[in-house]
Picture 1 (cartoon, rainbow, N blue to C red):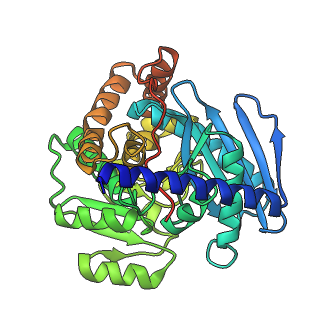
Picture 2: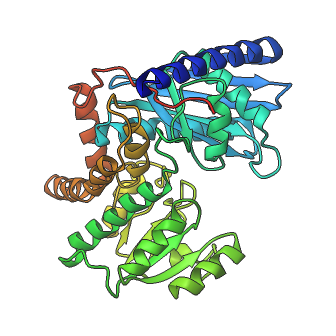
Picture 3: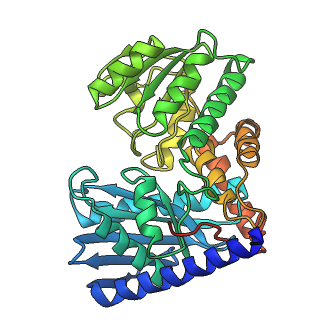
Length: 391
């Protein structure tokens, strides 16, 4: 049989199976979507499904440049309001991350209130997929903290609006690309501070050894950096320290250790009124989202003479990677690598803009994002192409 005809039949069969699964899920589920009115956001939806034990929030901040694209974060939030605050901050950050990266997508994010180790189930993720399907493509999901490619696969059984799967036509794990972008960002900080982007002999303190930090620590080791690491999983830290000759400190100590560059790769809000006086670093360049608790903390860093690589710029590698699979030509890792590589140049430009305007680097990056949104720079002209099929 002609290979093209065979692929067409497979795709047609996949679409039929997807439609059947979605219809079956809708009939059997107790899924409810409640619209929340939040100023400055296009759409915020509370999602509940008692049968699947799902409580979630999907936030779409801005779709000026294209459909909202952002990960599904799973955390045992202390309260619904804590989850709401997090998803609002994260979705807004995705708007600026997408604008800076020029990927033709808007800003969105979702959170599931659950312990990913003990409460997450395939049924929960399938229900989340049904909720995403009901939004009709305004929000496209991906992997995030607490979720995995397997979770994305279960979401995919209910909707096509998900990226980062393990199939042949998908981009897979975004972790290595996010970590590479952060590595290039750390090099940009070194270039700005020391006149050379070599990390040989430079001390880098890394907070968090998750799906991004674990890759980043290896990149830094092979670049010759002296490493200080911390993670709540002591066994993981010990294992990584053994292969990278890293010094281990407690999670409570890592933000105040003396180092050239501090790299927060855990959760957001680590740059705040309490931590800023404790920093003993020359630069902060890490993978965590929303590292500044407030925008004013970017100014506080500037006043202390600490160079800050804006998080939504430096951690854009994962977005650049997963968004590539939605292009008409399909996913190409070389294309993603080359775009991620240029995070270095983008950050150097932002440092220079901030210096010329006597402003914080965070404010300079926000202004750049606002400019691109206002004038439609990088706006998507062709609808995303979803190449993946159900296994």
